[in-house]
Image 1 (cartoon, rainbow, N blue to C red):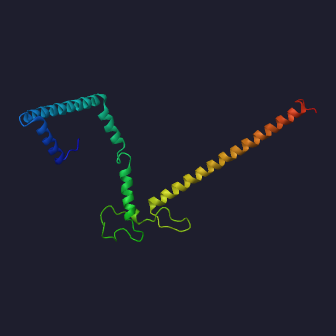
Image 2: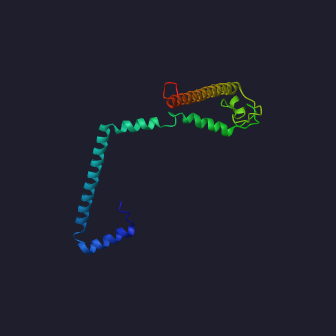
Image 3: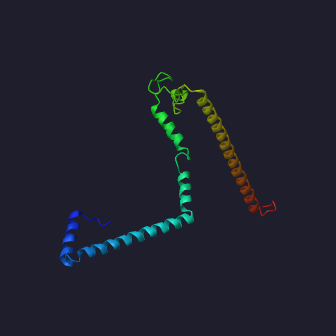
Length: 181
């Protein structure tokens, strides 16, 4: 707290010996020790009271809920980290079972597949799950494109109808509304 070294304490002791005197020095240190003990006791009691108030308010429960809600496991980041580790260890030319470094049950066909970011012009070796995922994504992409095209056509038609109504309204306003000029 005060960051006093041995030299500073020695200097304070020498000054106290000179100022107070050798006769009253033990009594002064005893009083100082009691005062320090009382201060520590008050600080401990205050800390305990604050912790009790926090417990009554439910702060610890909220903190525990926040920690569990933001944990990597509850957010699924543990599986993401595991997948990233598998990707880092992936060797494109290696087939499952040929590597002696990790010949355990964690080796799967996914490690021998080509990355999903392979160029569209080149045929990449894909496992059945990857192929199904690619087909699903392609179908979803086609549906999204069709929906966007339909919406664009509807907007275009609405703009044409609005322009036609404005023309008709301008034509009626120019003729006086009765059809004669």
